Length: 355
Image (cartoon, rainbow, N blue to C red; front, side, top):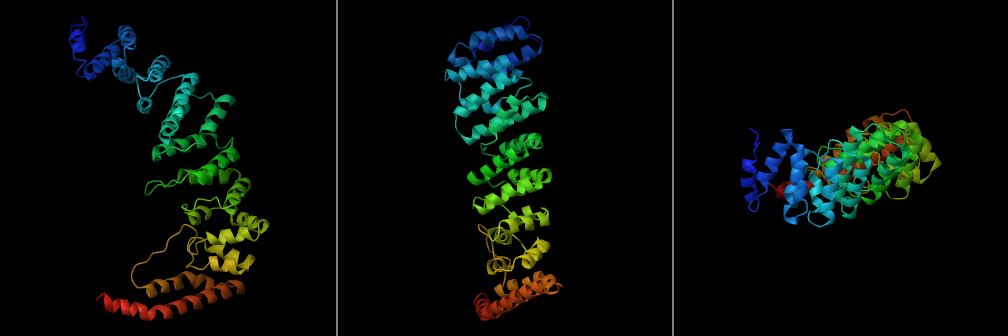
């Protein structure tokens, strides 16, 4: 029941030195009971007192951040009566681009990745609620994408903003993404794909050759993030495009592709590389025991049994009709066979030791 006579208001106000929770709940409830004007008068009274800043902020947040409330909150931050971190918890129904820019401007001064997580959430919310995006707004949002958030949700919002503009600004967003891959080490939570890779995959479907040229250049210059599961990434790219690019950028082009080609994942690409580029380094990179930069090597059980598993991987190459492929596969087969013989005694000794 609404406290029409403000009987409880005076009593709750006396409790504010202990806790502001009762007052914020009271004011939010009162405003939602169609008494917004009176609540705004109370907030206007409280906003001039630093000790009331938390009450004012929580009440405004509870009522939904409007242009007016957002500017009031920013004024409290400017006076150092409210922490910049308070902006982490604000959500809005409708604010102007001018107000959004003002909020973002304050967050940028924090100069920390956690604030870009907030920025991308606010931009993504605004984008979903506003259909009109002129050139100035678009350029402003694209400029923000060059920064790194500090958590998975921040990257998720970053990805959704990129996807929204990707058809119009394919190469620009690709360059932004590659720049972030060069300067930012990021590992998504287990079971999730790197959002930057998601954007590159989509970009490759829009402008395959132009986008791959940008990606390939970053690989050649050594600025490719070694934590990326590159074999998985390149398996869906048109192989003729990759081979043509490798020829144009020989020898580094085909050597880099070989470096990141997994025989089990990319059999066809491996086969084409063997046929088209017959050099020692490429053949060595395609060896199933070669691990790319940043890769790791592990196995369970006996080492010789682990080596023997490679014979199944080599089988389609051993049976290939192309003599170059057969010759390469036979060489690798003999090498693995020799490694098994060289390690047989060690495995037997280890087996006796661990019994």
